[in-house]
Image 1 (tube, protein in one colour):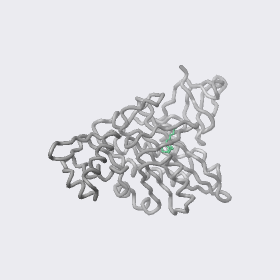
Image 2 (cartoon, rainbow, N blue to C red):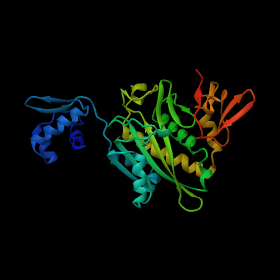
Image 3 (cartoon, rainbow, N blue to C red):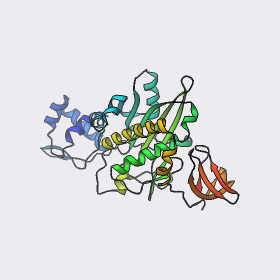
Image 4 (tube, rainbow, N blue to C red):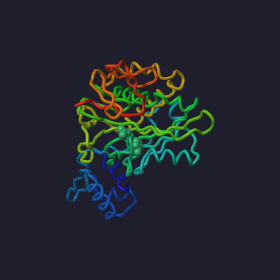
Length: 321
Ligand code: BTN
């Protein structure tokens, strides 16, 4: 977005003359005006003050690589390769490209918007510019595909930890890894297996989408929530959110690689939104009461025939109407 540098200058909320903006951006005053118009078209609230210049009326939350890096734990900072993009098809796809281009370190991509954001089960993920967080990380695990049992749930715990540390309350997890608030879905996690590099070494792309400032979502067909909407008394800068999520993912996945899934069972279960609900699984052929997860991350249903584990990632659970 050409107007990013312009918005950076206007971000202080003061009036800036066209002349000073042109000088600082190294463009003509006409070019400044064109950028202002474009920014206004994409939803920025900028006032043109006759004879004086331009003023940003409501704050914009710009992604800023150095701010994100600043918020990272020291060991995370040196372990990752961060790419902050204005626009990509999907941050998951971008992480794959980073991997293929031979980048070293854990590839991490954050984008201001996605033109082909992907959700689970082949669905699209609405990714409007500037409103939400779109983050992907490329992770490598040793020990074969079975190591990945429970990974989705571990990531849910990591995301919930990060959000709670930043001040969010009542974060719920919907098996396997949707992030919920009482008002609806706040975010989702997409885990894409990249494959086995050599015997026992598996690569996984983890994509996290969190609704941050979004106030309208005409294309979303289920109840949803955003951090701004749910917690209006505090600011939710995307850079701080991004750093916290990256730190949290690095943290929980390292713990998971060392200790396995078992230690995540209790923190996951404490946020289980299905517990005690009448649920249907396996395309309606299995019905039971939600009873948390087992040590492998399978969801447990208490049915008339006893407790039945539903395999992680296999099928989705629905609350019966
Ligand atoms: C879901 O369906 O609940 C998972 C949604 C995951 C969306 C994120 S946004 C960042 C990353 N890039 C994508 O294309 N998808 C994931």
